[in-house]
Every structure is written in C-alpha cells, then in structure tokens.
Length: 160
Image (cartoon, rainbow, N blue to C red; front, side, top):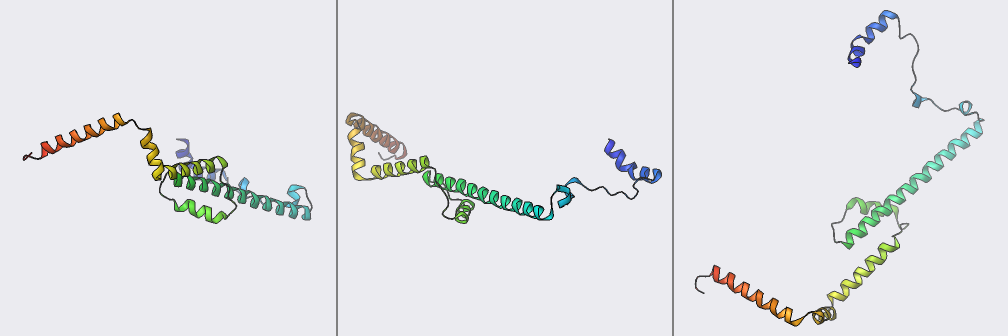
C-alpha cells in the first residue's frame, strides 16, 4: 500500500518540497576502485588488480575442470547402466581434454561389471549357470510352461 502511495504522490511531493536538488545517488556497486580508495600506490594497485584477475582465472579453470570431471562421471555411469548419451556432458569432457580423473572406486566397479558380463555371456558361463540349477525344478518349470501353452492354444483354437 505504501508503495502505491509513494508511486502516485512521490514526485508531486518532491516538487512541492523542492526535493531532488542536484544530488545524484550512486549505487554501492558502481563505485570505481582507485589506488587512493585502497590506500596503495599506483604500482601496488596495478599489481593488486593483476593478482585478482589471475586468481579469478585460476578459480574459473578449477571450476571448469570439476564440472568436466562430474560430466565424465555421469557419462561413465550412463555407459555402465546403458542409458542414453548426453551431448552436453560429452562437450564438457571434450573441452577439458585429457586432464580428467575418474574416481578409482567407479573405475573398479565398471571393470568388475565388464568382466562379469563377459564371463556370463560366454558359453562356459552359461554352462556354469546350468550346473547350479536344480534339474527337478527345471523339469517342473518346463512342464508347467507347456501346459500353460496348451491351455492358451485350446482356448484360442476351436479345432483342438
């Protein structure tokens, strides 16, 4: 409510009271730093400014590297769980170059999963799985599957 009153009557009140004389209010962020404001000589101030710029560049570089490492991690997890690729993550990894590190734990997990899948996909892996199965259980499962197939076929086919 006070905002509405100020917006409607503010300029009229300033005109009546003679406010708004030559003073210009400078926002706090727009103040330009000078060597005198910092209490330094010109050379010291230039060194100070150069040092600030270098520190900012270093922080930005570290931030970009961390961001690329996270993108690399996400990409490895996508590969591991067979999820679709992300173009944004791939671009981040390419921008960072070869400076990326993959966490050791994740690398071990990925390697172990790949080895396990390779063993399971091989013929020996399939035989090993068959060896661990109970033959009676396998026989009953096959018989129930056959009876289910016959029942479905009898329901759908009038000739049988």
